[in-house]
Amino acid sequence: MSDNARRVGTVSRGIRCPIIREGDDLGAIVAESVLEAADAEGFAIRDRDVIAITESVVARSQGNYATVDDIAADVRAKLGGGTIGVIFPILSRNRFAICLRGIAKGAKKLVLMLSYPSDEVGNELVSLDKLDEAGVNPFSDVLSLEKYRELFGVNRHPFTGVDYVEYYGDLVRESGAEVEIVFANDPRAILKYTDVVLNCDIHTRARTKRLLLAAGAKTVRGLDEILNAPVNGSGCNEKYGLLGSNKSTEDKVKLFPRECGGLVLDIQRRVLEATGKKVEVMVYGDGAFKDPQGKIWELADPVVSPAYTDGLVGTPNELKLKYLADNDYKHLSGEDLKAAISESIKKKDADLVGNMASQGTTPRQYTDLIGSLCDLTSGSGDKGTPVVLVQGYFDNYTN
Image (cartoon, rainbow, N blue to C red; front, side):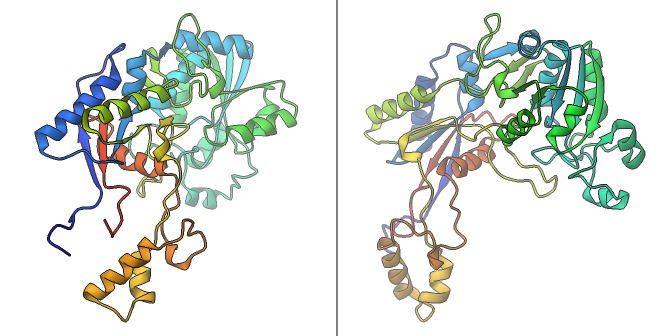
């Protein structure tokens, strides 16, 4: 490498910000925090740097909250307040338990149908090995709570120690409704119990609703249709409803942020005016990665990024350096190898789909890839860095 060549590729920095409150000018706070961090740490802002803001502070600045009673009122209005089939919820104290309290307060009885052996994002109710031992076919068998306990006993979540079957049942009863718990993976199984259904799955919700309606369900609503408009002055999310919500207090949820395209453009403009550099900006929630220990897919939000600037549209178009080194240029080494690979990168096709030299690269959306990086950088606890600055992401070996 020449003496002035860059030695560093992608860098991800958590940016500390003030605690965000409802009504704060988030665009100004984010831009100022990034510029102050650059000045304090001695790095420069460059074109195509990415500023990413966690959805939590966006929703907080918007004041996008709703109470358990707001949820109950909407559920009662849209599903009748009688017996409701609540199917395929994820197993989460933070993500679903408070929603379930509101749903239960809006009904006389819930038939809670849980998918098994795990929920949609991988939280396990029973292991595949136990299913095999019991001779249970999860694709066709419908289990009562009694049968589930008889076959599998108590199964606590490996990370939280919670028995979600017991926890959800107790929570419904404490909220004033009766509850019957069953286990099945075909959504149409709920129709043996009730024809009024609230489907709580996230990424498979459209298919679930289609199957239920085709099978004769009277009323089907998704979580994305609960609080998709304000109730008694509450917050809402027109596109996603309760999907992507988080527990705020014991009786209040923070909803996924509402339209925030203006925010990302505002931050981009502020940084351009301050530095002359055009950065990209995105709002991110969950990443999209899977934990190898707990088998949990980290995507309980409906999307990774609800808003981003135009430069983040698309997928990577990259060559695999080790393929070039091991195949096309296996006879070269040192500066000759570097020069040959650099030339290949400069001349690469605009679309490398099907090209052997691109195999093993990651053709996922930029926002999903960068959102995962940011989610891991910011963490979910007390790091205090709700903004992440990613630099060099769009670089390659030639830069």
